[in-house]
Image 1 (spheres, rainbow, N blue to C red):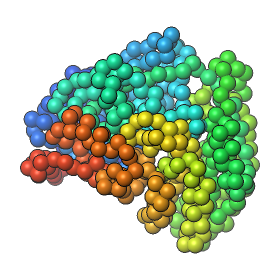
Image 2 (tube, helix red, strand yellow; image 1 turned 90 degrees about the vertical axis):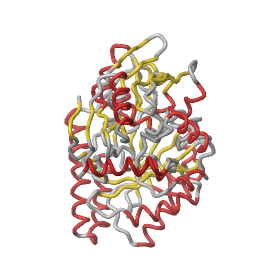
Image 3 (tube, rainbow, N blue to C red; image 1 turned 45 degrees about the vertical axis):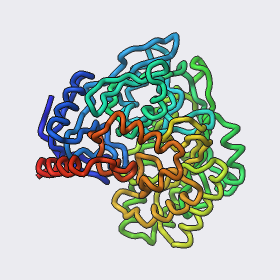
Image 4 (cartoon, rainbow, N blue to C red; image 1 turned 30 degrees about the vertical axis):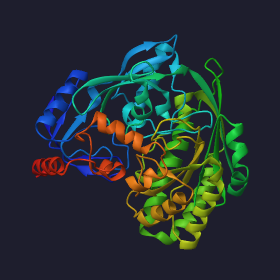
Amino acid sequence: MTATGAVWRNWSRTEAVRPLRVERPAGAEAVQRAVAAAAASGLRIKPVGSGHSFTGIAVTPGVQLDMTGVSGVLDADAATGRVTLGAGTRLHELPELLAPYGLALENMGDIDRQTISGATSTGTHGTGLGFGGLATQIVAARLVTGTGELITVSESERPELLPAVRLGLGALGVLVDVTLQLVPRYVLHAVERPRPIDEVLDHWHELVRDADHFEFYWFPHTATALTKTNTRLPGDAPRRPLGRASRWLDDEVLANGLFRAVAATGRVAPGTTSTLARLTDAVTRHSGDRDFSDFSPAVFTTHRSVRFREMEYAVPLEAVPDAFREVRALIERKNWRISFPIEVRAAASDDNWLSTAYGRESGYIAVHRYFRENHREYFAGVEEIMRGYGGRPHWGKLHTQNAQSLREVYPRFDDFLRVRDELDPERRFSNAYLDHVLGDGVAADIVADDTAKESAGAA
């Protein structure tokens, strides 16, 4: 199916574009035809997921591919735990899709609105030193390259490409499906407790190493962190899930509702932010003190309805306390009024070339601002601190780094570019964001011709 492009916007409203046309392929062959047609017209082409990236990584002025029709379980083997999913499958659909096989993702982040291909391609991760990001669970993938070829990359077919394809930024081809190594369905015992922030920082290393999954949130202008510790239990362990009323009160009314009120008030009356933060802290200490257990997706994920902007950096695990303290001191020194919490997590080292955790155990520090507030000065100040620790920015979240600076913190950066040269020699899958973070590397006549056609289409 093909349609004239309407204006597309991402969730956080940082990006908007009117593609020349939108195509909705139903399978691999349709994707191949779409890529071939775009090449014949001299246009760039990109798939788009759910728009949960804060950057312009999915922006497509030329041909936008809506992969909704390429979704669901395509193949499953409960014995081995390997399941092949269409690239357009949404993470929130997985509990129902995987239930018949008794399987689950080994780890998840706290948002489940993304497509599986979008989440893995941008480096989405959860928390827990025993677990890598979502992309580490990929054992095979099929993708359409810039020349229109459908290739399979797996442990037995072109395995040398797996470290690039698992987390490919959408720069190597259009993912059609991915095969994941899943685990038997399991229960998480969640303990959420408020603790003094200095105590958490002083014991950071023990907290992350002694728990299966540990993270904390800190509201600026307060002395308290909300800690979340999840312990893995067998799938047949007794469950004590949150009641519907309790979850609604805590997550919808007190979390989303309170965040929205505090952020909106702070925007029009910045002087009230510190007072409102202390109020939020008091409410959070009440609502955030809970103990429950449920199947993993219900514990890992939360519903977020308040729009915000986010920047997240991965730094060496041992640097987290010092980096965090520098951010806190910066907020105090600048007298900024910040209404959204800072989130801190951890992840295992992995071998995916553009993973933020490549080659090192990593801690993640994420800062947020309400989407109607100006985030730039705050994010720029935090980014400078993170770069001082060799920080790597999340590919789907806001940052200002470019190919030159990113090459310094990714040892396999140029290896990734060589794979890109092979799979997308004419840069059919590029856009302004990828040109910035990877370098364009395209002949001037191709770029000029492509940009002219896209501009004419947008007009």
